[in-house]
Structure formats: structure tokens, C-alpha cells
Length: 209
Image (cartoon, rainbow, N blue to C red; front, side):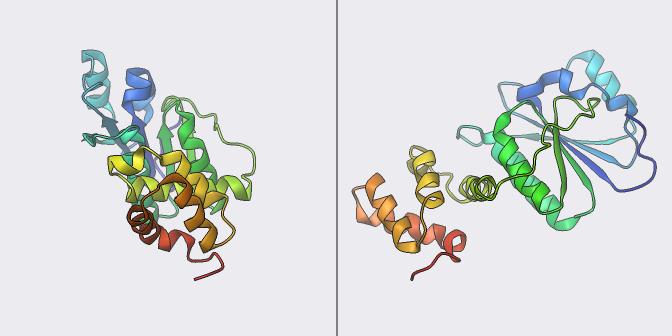
């Protein structure tokens, strides 16, 4: 990987729990225009002396973010949340999620379809993009719903039925169908109303009231 001395800024969002130190192979070739954010949890919060030395010698700027949210795939959710914030500020930059996790693929397809420069690599020094095919509208919609869910439904009572709620929205052709699908998941009307209210920004373009 060549130094990025000119051109657009690059951000590397590292899923350290997934790729560990191998994912940071290539940091020695980064430039002062590159930003590396390392996301880690208590399950993976150690750096070897060799890796620490390479980071110190790299010209890139490094940031470390410990993720402590008590939910499954908390690191993935935080990376996507931060990525959306970065995209809103700098649309021309190149964004690389450093991970082997296929859970990112749908979101990357969605971002790419909107002309953002987002891709995934298993290590910083590996330049092959993992997402090559054009995304389908269904995949884009599912990625949008999953991203929305990760941001707005962090409570355990929602996480328990995560995939069912996502499918309830994905398969619905109207707002009424969303409500009906949710009723099949939950018996209590109060929690259905609660979820439906949270979903309103996501389903605003569906027919119905």
C-alpha cells in the first residue's frame, strides 16, 4: 500500500476483536493523512510490543475506542454508528472497515450504492475489496433497517427479537402490515405501539397512516 501523501483522507475502522494484530499489518506504510480507529472490548484489549512499536513508528493518527455496550455485536454497531457520522462530515474520504465479519457486507453495499467510498479489508495492507457486485434494492433496504435497529433498539427486550422485527419491517408493504407483523411477535399491544413509534422515521415512505 503506497503512502497517501495527496488526495482524499482515509479512515481505517479496525474491528480489533475480529482481526487482532494481523489486521494492523501495513500500518507502517500509512501517511499523515490517514486516520486509524481501533475498536476493542474487554475480550481483546492487549497489544504486543512489536505491534505497539509499529504503531508508534507509523505516520498515521491513531485513536482507541473501548466498546462496553452490553449487547451482542456491540463493536460492529459502534463501528457502523461512527461510520455514519464520519460520512455525514466528509463524503469524499475513503473508509475501510478492517474486519473479516460478513455482518458488515450489507451495510457496505448500501453505502457504496450511495456513492460513498466504503470497503472492507481483512488487514490494512490488503487492498482487495470484498464487495464487488452491485447491491440489490432488497439488500440496501435490509442494510438500512439493520443500521437503524442498531442505533435505536439497544434494549435487551428488543434484541431478543432482533431478526423478527427486522423481517417484520422488510416484508411489509404498508404501515398497517408493519403493525400486523409486530403483533405476531408480541402479544402485548403496549410494546407493539412502543416499537411502532420508534420505527416511524424508517417506515415513513410506506403507504398508510
